[in-house]
Image (cartoon, rainbow, N blue to C red; front, side, top):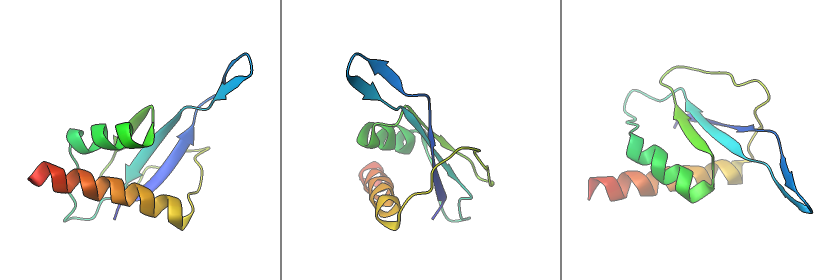
Length: 88
């Protein structure tokens, strides 16, 4: 499975409400993994990411957050669900 990075963007504040938008970066795909724009769109919608970027090679995003195993598994589940629905 590809490596997953979360890159937080500057926090937006409006009164007492705060929101920190983020970008999901998936990289280092295995040879048998396929990534499509549809997967990106579904993952963006399911996670609330501002955008999802996918790269075949390794990309080190400075300032990205390390995900817990639970968080990474949740994102993998979203990707798996997207790939299953796309093949139906």
